[in-house]
Length: 448
Image (cartoon, rainbow, N blue to C red; front, top):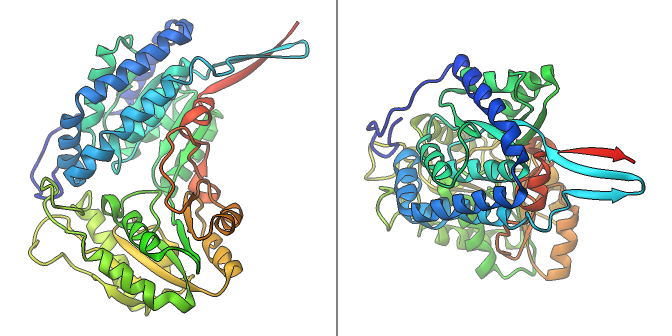
C-alpha cells in the first residue's frame, strides 16, 4: 500500500486467497462454542478493554491512518482514532440492560449469537468501520472473519493486537487481507459464514447480496449516500452554511454520511453561495501530516481521477463553478490531491447532484418552497443521512418527511447510541447502540 500524498510504499500486507478464508472460517467456527458460552459480563469486559487499548494507542492509530489513506492528522486524532474508542465503550455499556431474554405468554424468547460473521470494511474510516461491526458482534457472542480494505489495511493489525491483549481468545477475531474479488467474494460465498456485514459502495453491496443469497445468509449493508442539507429560509445562515461546507469537505468528502447537496431557498441562493465560497477558502489543501491542513489527498490516485472527472462533468453540464475546479491544487503537482469545489445553480437531476462523488465537491441546488425542497432531497436512489437548518418545529416536520436513515437538525451532535443506516440503495440494517447489537443476534422462542 502507498501513501497517497507521496506515492511512496508505506507497508506491505499479504494478498490473501480463498484458502486463507477457509482457514480463518475454520478457526472462527472452532472458537465459536466457547465464546458464545462466555458470560455476557465477561464479553462486555473484553469489549471495554478493547476500547481502552485503542485509547492507549490513539496517536499511533492517528498517524497510521494519515499515512495510509491521507486523512489530515488533526482529523485522524480527533475523529479517526476517537470514534472507535467511543463506539466500543458504548456497546460494552449495553450489556447490563439489553433484553437478552424475554417472557411472552408461555414463550421464552432468547437472543443468541448468529454465529460466524464475515465483515468487509472500507478505507475512508478504516478503524471506525471495523469496530462498528466487531464490538457488537463480540458482545453478541459471535466470532468474526474480517477483510479490511486493501487501500488502508494497517489499523486492522493494531486492532487485532489490542483485542488479543484484551483477552479475546484465539480464533474469535481473524483478519484476512486481500482484494474484494478474491477474499471478499470468498467471504460472501462461504457456507461456514452465517452473516456478512459490509460497508462500501452500492455496486459492491449488490454483488455481496447476490453471492450471499446462495447460502441464504444474513446480509447487513451500509452503502453509498448523496445526502441533502436542507437550509430553510428562516435558518441561521452564519451557522448553517459553514457547517454545511464542513460536512461536504470533511475527510476530503470521502464520507458516506457527508452532505454533498446543499438545498437552498432560490431567493437566498446568491447570498448562500457567497457564504459557502468564503467558508471554502479556509480549507487548506496539503500534506496530511501538517496540522494546518484541512483537506489531504484523496485516498488513492484512482479516487483523485474519479473526483476530477465529476468536476469536469459538472462544468460540461452547465453548472456554475463558484469555487475550485478540476486539476490538482496550485503548488501540489504530485500526490492524489483534488481541489475543493463548489457548484452553484445545480439542476436537481444533474449527474453531480445524483451520483456519489466521494470527494470535496459541494453542489448548491435552489428550491421554491418546503414541498419542493423535500421532493428534491428525496429524489435520489440513496437515503443515508441528511440535515435541516431552520426553526425547530418546521425543521422537525421537514426531517420527518425525508426518506433517509438519519437527519441532523441545526447541527445536532453525533450520538453513538443512535441507529445509523440507510433507506433505499444506501443499504439495510443499522449500526451503533442497541440497534447495531440486534443485527448480530438470532431470535429463538421456547414454548413451555
